[in-house]
Amino acid sequence: MASVTSSGTPAQAGTAPGRNTWTVLLCWITVLLEGYDLVVLGAIIPTLLKTEHLGMTAGDATTIATLSLVGVAIGAVCVGPMADRFGRRKLLIGSVVLFSVFTLVVPLANSVAMFAALRLIAGLGLGACMPVSLTMMAEHMPASRRARASTLTMTGYHTGAVITSLLALQVTDDWEILFYLLGVVGLFVAAVQWYRLPESEAFVRAKENDAERVPFTELLKPAYLRAGIGIWVASFMGLLLVYGLNTWLPKLMNDAGYPVPTAVTQLLVLNVGGVAGLVLGGFVADRRGIRGTTMGWFAVSVVMLACLSIKMDSDLLLNVVIFLTGVFVFSAQVLVYAYVTAFYPAAVRGTALGSASGIGRLGSIVGPSITGALVSSGIGHPWGFYFFAAVAVCAFAAVLTLPRAGGGEPGARGSEAAPGSAAGG
Image (cartoon, rainbow, N blue to C red):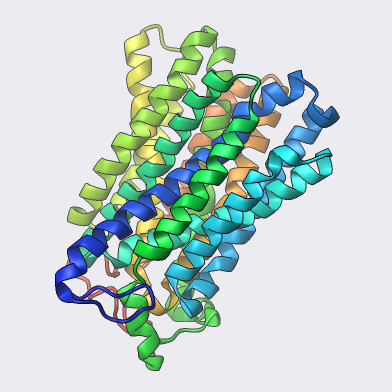
């Protein structure tokens, strides 16, 4: 299959392998930058409060963090229709430039309000990056490898989070360095994308064939509505779990009686399990079917989360359960995205993935808030894990409602089928 030039015209077939390599690398790095950014604020909040930067209070920090996630949610929802109309390449580069520029100027904010506004605008660009990256990766992979395209791309997110954590330990009070570094690297990546990132061939073909163009309202019609509702609910519940656990796991475990160093180490174990789960989940889903694998992953998540409500005397057993929780919870959410890339045709894929990501981001706001309320009430453990287990049950039920047929399911029709052909139950 021939690649395409940056302008969307076919390139020589012999250059395709190299161009596909650039697509994989640049999309992975873009997701890495998002992982870096979404963790950086949490890493510096203690310093901002300790130094009373701009007179910031704990309430101000909470508002800034919330507005950042709101910006990400809006960006994710809005980018889909634009990517389906104007192309994946332009939207991805523009999104990277937007969040990089506004990240660079965050340290220059002269008030809490300006700090929050800059984070909100940066979030708009940041939220657009992941759905477009996942769409491009999926469209540069054979349909039989769509799940692995999504899960392997998302390993970049956890890599970025780890990099931020390690850098934050080094720069201590010089938190501004973290923002300057991200902004400069982001602009450099955007420049490389401009010269090396090809447009998606699936988008080019869909654009050339007007009959394949699908309006946003098509997602609300019977052919797609059943899948859309299930995807939105599953994505909301999945990101609620991811952000709720990453935010409150150390505190929940400390409330259960585990010492603070052990509780913090468990967060690392959880994320290591997440990376392993992404690799394993994508491989299994491509072989056994995305929908069935996602259901299985959420079902095991229910069991693991329920087990965490029990105080364990063995550190080894506890770490195994924490690891397995990361394996299944984190990759289950990404498998929902993989289902989207396999189910919808190219003409509307970006819109569908953007809506799934945007609605899911609402869960990332709700999860930490509800868990925080449980902790403040003194019932974080065990009720926090009961709550998480119930959320996983809801995600399982949502996936259960999804149509059985889709591009990513064994024996199903190709994912570039006409609208509605993949929606059969």
